[in-house]
Length: 488
Image 1 (spheres, rainbow, N blue to C red):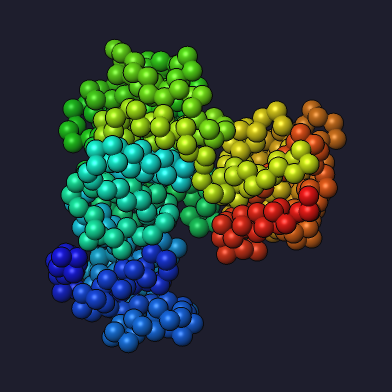
Image 2: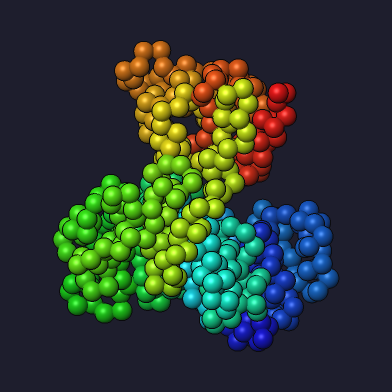
């Protein structure tokens, strides 16, 4: 069945796969097993790529390697790895000549019959996606029927499980701006958590390109958009949809706006709403859903175990996506057990009265500001620094000066962050203290030496990890290992 679907979609077209990464390896296997003419193009040779590539080669897959492997594309269907820009000269020339540019995630969206729930945004994607999956899984267990599959930018690629996913099942995915740039097929239910400057090193320092990529999560297939009324960029996206609906345009999604600061339907929909639109906000200790005429309590905020206003917003995002698809009882059942996702304000241990938090996922200043807000009131020693994504560190400096007693800097951006902190007009004389570490291990040990009983050490780098680690998970695992090895 899976091979038949693939053959029908490909329809005798030859295929190029650009980059044999995590998402494209399962795709290459599926296309090869279906007997589809396939060329894999990667700067690394099959020998450098390892056993998986050599097995593909044995099955007849052609490989083109080297620095110029993307120059002359011959495939009629081109599958782009998320990390490869679509405006490379070779790709543009192939598209101009009639080739179709697509991706593994778009192929899944084209082929699946299941309802799809997708989350994008600058911050909170993984937690919101995880919660969406848990809510739907709890409902599936309650009914004893459909299955729920979670993937996309997290976990195993969904395409790899296409044959197992039936029409009654649900597929939940996290989608990055890299994945969304060229997507022409949208999910059934879409959420944009927030949008702030991120990945400006990859998006040609163009906020418009980044914003437009995120907006690609909305399409003619989308029944509902859930988004943040408190974020100017996402509020503008919602306002544009509302304007088009009020003008009588049909086929547009219902809009669910959420806010952690506003307290009524009219506060969120200041210019009015359309039929089917809803507001989600906090009132009297509850997260409520409102249609403008009535309010339905969904979840007591006190049931949420993970700290911080941003996690309340993550719950609002996920609940907005699944409202109408699950019984409201699943919200509290999940919240009372969910203790967060790895590397996101993860409490590693408490030693000598000091809490050690791993929030290695915080790869932008806004994420670090959110983490600091969640730990408000604690005596904080923070570890920052890493790969330079060409972001402004002024928001980071403001958050650090407001919340931290000390900051330990490491990595390629240490100098830029220090300069931003020193330039920030802080009213806390002598705060924060600034320390420069020689490497990551030295940074953790320095933070330990500076920490005080009753306080905490927070790894929240505000930067990507690629200057010293393969990814944020390796960085977080290294922090966890160092902390767990501290002598009692």
